[in-house]
Amino acid sequence: MTECDRRSFMMQTGAGVAALTLMPEFATAAPQSEGSALPVAVIGVGRQGRAILGELQKMDAVQVAAICDIDERRRLSGQRRAGGAEVFPDHRAMLDKRKDIRTVFIATPTHLHRDVAVDAIQAGCNVYCEAPLASTIEDCRAIASAARSAVGIVQAGLQGRSNPIYKLARTFYRSDAVRHLVSLSAQYHKKQSWRTPSSDPAREKMLNWRLDPALSLGLAGEFGTHQFDVANWYLGQLPTTFRGSGSIRLFDDGREIADTVHCDIAYNDGVHFQYNATLGNSFEGRHEVFYGTNSAIKLAWTHGWMFKEADAPTQGWEVYANRQQFHNDEGITLIADATKLAAQGRLKEGVGLPNPPLYYSIADFLTSIIDQQPVVCSVEQGLRATVIGILANQAIVTGQTVTADEDMFKGT
Image (cartoon, rainbow, N blue to C red; front, side, top):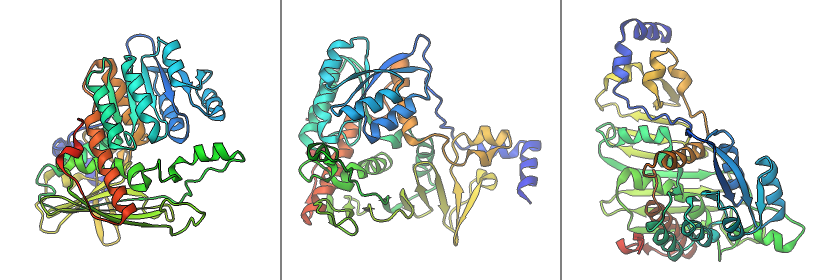
């Protein structure tokens, strides 16, 4: 049966749609506010802050009313992007003056999160704090302590839990579709130097905080934390042992931070998580793979696939699913809103997310504020993922085995 014939059969008999209704829907709509747009502030408008501004501009429910950054050039750049928002060099001055702003997005360098987040929480604001939550366990706990008595909504900016494809994939992971987990792996590959040049030595040092071993959590902490949280969310357990190594493979420019790292993360049940990241190669970008006895699930942030084992049982909806070939393997494409799209004969149009993963995380945060719903990712969950990033980086930097105990993952 050709693809065209199959689609015609689905539409005429309804059998395909009936089968696909086994697949839950996880599409996220833009948040809607019944009143006027919420005035919000973005604190820290470097690369991630600018990305947040870009996603906020897609949402009618908010208006960026203030920009805060200690760097004048970035403040002015952020102001232009935000269409004339008021600018501040200091977050405390902004919180004191703009009492009308009750929602803030924190995208400062990781090691500066603590003071900004705690001050904003204590000022009664709704707070979206980028991940990793902080650069030390002590700072993570300080933010978690403040969040426990918060008047407003506080969300850790870990994007996987809001991702429609990741939510759909998790339903399969928790069913018999994957069955017994064999192992998992993840990578972050992006060819970039991490260095921002400046003619001003003081400004260059500030801009390149990720290359300062006293401040930075390295690749495993700064980027791996998001991927470690996906594992936490799927597995429902925390790792116990970390082994790692790192080296400079490309950017031999005097830096002390490795541009390529590897880490083996072990769990009590014998499962191992292999993580690797590099700034020297971009092949296959960022993804996670959960290997099970019935199938493997590969997640790549805007796309996802399930690769069935030959002896795994076939589900009814699989007959009508979209598939992609990867060399000798065939992957079932994981599509959010599959039932609706299939009913419209547009299933292939649903391959991949229409927006970046950041969009869905921000949308969930704003929906929690507007509808007074629990956040999708709490500060406590953010703390646990960040602690894994901190311990993985410690194992990489020292070359020694690092052991975690339950107390490390607690907010107090």
